[in-house]
Image (cartoon, each protein chain N blue to C red):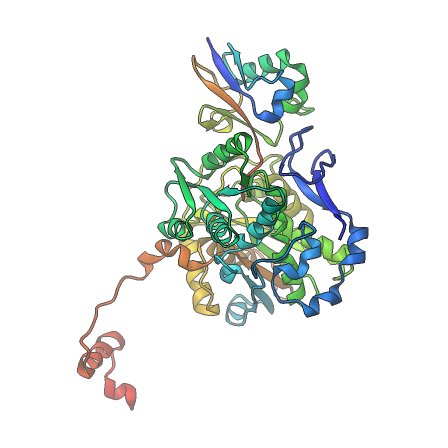
Length: 91
Length: 419
């Protein structure tokens, strides 16, 4: 199964410049774990000391914030896109 | 004037100079403008203000403006209305409405933030500016971009109120309507800022943009005779304004312009989009995002970027957050208009309605000084209240027709009325 993780520019210095990373995970949590296993320097930017996804990092599965999908345990299917977007705009 | 400010990460404290960036590339937390207050004390003096016009630029030293900045428009300087009728009705002795419904040029407090954002856009040589917006911000960007010669491109949810769309289009701005809610628009803009070299005022110019909100707070303190209120009630969408008013008050204390005093910060949301008030009321460690469903479109941000900071501020100040239903919002809009002559948009209905609720909960007390922030104009959201005011039947242009009208309306005769 092929899942695409889209990497924001600010994260790409940890992914050897790659804007997209393919993985074969079954859940969003697994996808993030695959990503950070492959690029360990990215790990502390994705999760905080408690292992939670960082407060100011939003994770989307296709068009939806994963918090509306039950969190990072939500499952993935072939062709899904996982987006990492810093929580920067608003107001 | 040497530069006495720079961007600093709100979490890890790393400084980043001055650049169009909004988050720390080390820890990905938001950046904000930090000032060297020792330097500021030397150049910013309260007595210098007397000779300046009453608009937001009178506080220029306290804003992140470039050295060569010259004001191109008189933004802000809005009335602080001392309430009489509503204060009496609610049993308060010192109630004020800070009325940004009449902020220049586009009739909302967003004119303030756009003013500082466009100063930054000019400094960083952007030719195109834009924003993600629930409406008011788009109006402000379009108006000031037109005035200052920027190209404007704004991104809005497709279902926005027609008046707010029109009030952006008229200035010649390009409008991109997005099939989705504000949070979808917001996410797209974060990606656009990542891809294109545009000055998106609330994305990559956000630290400079949000500083403009402070002038709402400076004006309140000055209009209270250089004093802070006991309570302030602030509408919350992304949660930025309430934190910037707090920053403004802190700065005035640091500069010695007002005496230090505890101020309770109260946040107001619509029940149909209340992630911040929900977080306060349930004492959540992290707020839970919501899918907005309210007539208060300008506050309909379900995933507020400054939510964590707003929650922290409210808790630490001893304040509270509340929310009101759509019918309560409409009632509060009418009440504010009928008692104070202020016609506010739905966000102001939220703030006024929440104030009433907080008084009922005895969180706001009669002897305290309370300021309620009205941030937008009612002419922009007439759709929300139109059903309350059905068209009346027209009469013939004759005196007997008017007398008959009075009979039916008042149950009296013209002769009786004139006697």
